Length: 182
Image 1 (tube, one colour):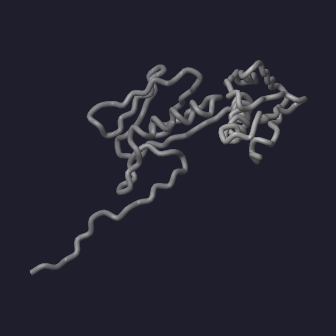
Image 2 (image 1 turned 180 degrees about the vertical axis):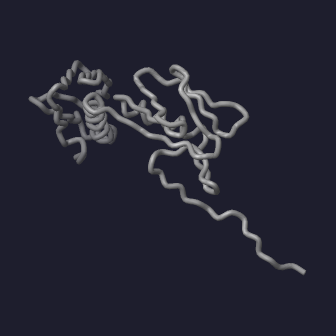
């Protein structure tokens, strides 16, 4: 049995979980999220807990058991606390700014790199080299942060690029001259 899937999900006070067919809706103080789960698993609300059970012992049902439970847990955590990813821009003259709902980055290219901020996400820039992405949907926050990071990944020689807060970049030694010859 799935170790993750068999654990019940606690519903904190102020959060409501509604299950109708294959749709699970979670409402909390920060907003509302919903998913459609696969028919291989069943979701039940029992008191202040959400139980996820699989209908049979097929390989697909076993795979979806823990996944569905984790998705519901992430939705509950999102509507209560929310999620945040921080990105740092490292490079001389590299910076970013917000223009309405557009994130404009100058990353050493001859052009700017523009990102339209998706609905449901909030992007703040307390400094020119710091990007804070917040929202209630864990997948949306992570996806947008990954797209911004992919615009200029950190390179291993000088360490320049867009990186996650606290991300360690393994640095490589550059070319070294070994004297010799005639």
